[in-house]
Length: 368
Image (cartoon, rainbow, N blue to C red; front, side, top):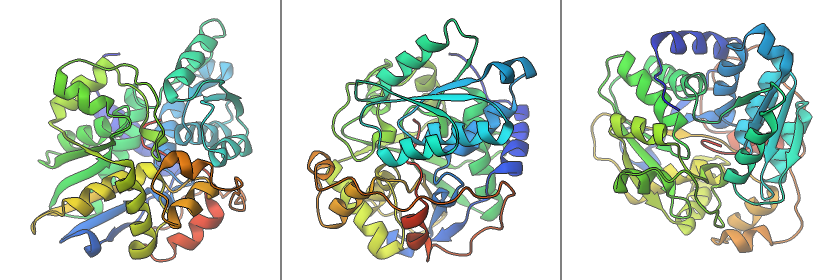
């Protein structure tokens, strides 16, 4: 789909997100290098930044579209965002998830009142195909997790605008990349604010669709799923997403599953954070490539929600996603009660996020 994020998208997205989501903390992380900062989307209402884009998209629906309801496909976080936004705005929602979507995400989606449709197949691409087929004759609105200007403006645009308000002289964003919506939104905010901030995108070696697409000059619109800790970054990319990423001048990097697992352990031990695999990917990149002194480097810590079984296995030293998924019973953290919809004040630091994460996890991921 061909689209551009205009100033009106950013302004309206900011209003929708400001009304129902949180302004998350930006905290220093000298453990990762000089002048490194963490944008803690782990604090967000659903435990992930994806609620931003969902709120922006659903708030832009016409009354007729609201009455028909919405459908989404998701590895978890986008579905949680859509479920929360739909509940908040009084809209019916269905969410299609792949067979291997974490249970913590499925349960979170259902707690917010959306109907969860679990596919027989693994991987995000199959869920999207089923979701698009489902809306063909119903009139429901399909809410893409990345290929939509409202979603991208909400997810990346409002996040970047907050960062520019919180910090001066931002030299680079380091962010996870799946379908490219977060990247497109941040790039739009940089462009509209007249900044010259660099974009560093990180993917898992298990699902490198955007990296390969940019390197080879063609869009890998599907990507066969492989075992990964970062299921939120799985799947292919639309041709338009590749063009927007190319125009943004993003520098793409790949990290291994072992590096992602090590970054999850590092985040817990050194940063006091519980992070999902998708959020650990950019941390893994900086652990191997610390920035030089100079302008600020902002890491988008996209989410905290990971199945307890996988979390415990990784914390015990497991670095293989297949073995982690089979390590013991699928224990889950105690579910949190629904929080109020009035935005709260920004947190002061990353300390304490670990304890909150253990009881409040509801989602995971970058672009799905």
